[in-house]
Amino acid sequence: MSALEEKTKTKTIDKPVGHFELVISELLRLGVTLSLATILVGLGLMFAHHPDYLRSSADLARLTTPGAALPHSLHDVTEGVRAWRGQAVVALGLTMLILTPILRVAVSIIAFAIERDRVFVAVTSAVLAVLLLSFMLGKVG
Amino acid sequence: MSPLEFALTLLGISVGAGFLGSLVGLGGGVVVVPALTLLYGIDIRYAIGASIVSVIATSSGAAAAYVKERLTNLRVAMLLELGTTTGAVSGAFIAGIIHSRWLFIIFGLALAYSGVAMLRRSQRRGEAVPPDRWADRLRLHGSYFDEARGREVAYRVTHTRLGLCLMYVAGLISGLLGIGSGVFKVPAMDLGMRIPIKVSSATSNFMIGVTAAASAGVYFVRGDIDPFIAAPVATGVVIGALAGSRVLPRTDSRLLRLVFVLVLLVISVQMVWKGIR
Image 1 (tube, chains in turn cyan, purple):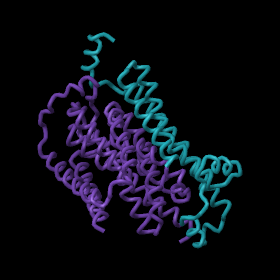
Image 2 (image 1 turned 45 degrees about the vertical axis):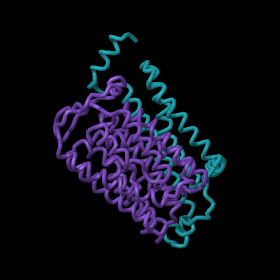
Image 3 (image 1 turned 30 degrees about the horizontal axis):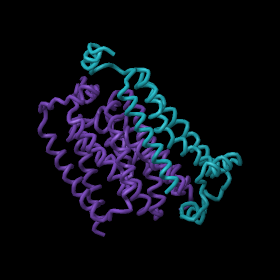
Image 4 (image 1 turned 180 degrees about the vertical axis):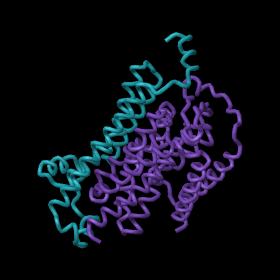
């Protein structure tokens, strides 16, 4: 990029909604919609499999007190989803919700690369690297 | 209380949390954690797990609208995420070394102070923003359409390096103390970088999702996220955040600032209380 181009770009501060904004915005909307739909299906399954959830208060304690067997690994989730277990389907939806912002960072790297904005490709890649690092540290710790 | 009643009432509370959270750029943990622990007697581990989910839901739910309306400054957000994520990782690292009691008191007071400073700033409008070469080179300046004022508002960003350092501290504190990081992000953008309050709030809202997603993985693997608690929270929060994202552009900036400072003071009291207890 020439010095002149750089200069003119600095001046155009108030550009309208760009392609970039639309992509990010649609990605987030899609992520939220899909995960929420999955969560609701899972919640529906939980109530469908256990009709006593509509009345029994003993069930609530069992559902919300630590010590219950929660799906908390990818294996639990995939196995549970295959068996149409409500909790596992909810967990799948939650996983999708958690992954949405991370996917957003990854997509931004591509978007900045298309715009040939090297500084921001570097910045966003560094953010993604730190995120992945924190995931790995979390699993170790 | 039956599981159905639990899910429905929690859904209602979460709508409120998502609404407030999307307006002030916080995750809604301020509402979700006390509601779960005090109202339902839920274990704090599950309450924190649910609040992390609520942060991500608020962020992604509202951000779709804010980004499209250019209330979110994407470039500022992505630059500052560098500070918050590294801060959060280092915070999690040294969390075991430092005694958190004093940190709660110190940062609780710092939060109260920044709340007062934010109120004072609202009285000094129209001050010239000092030029910043970094902001120019990284093209951080921006503009948004303010529906409340009915016109396009252009703004210039300043003190980029200071902002980045403050974000590192914000990430550090959230990693250390396990509190939402939005509370420190908005004051840092507002007081430090002189970004308009609506943009600060929307940009903070955008950033908190990423920070929370990083720790959510850890909580999930540890088994701290209970699907039956998190499901109504996530659903309600998204509904609330969508409503909030419609209201924010039309809200008067001064009112928004006032609401934010009030929430800030509540959190600072909560923090100091945690330290003293």
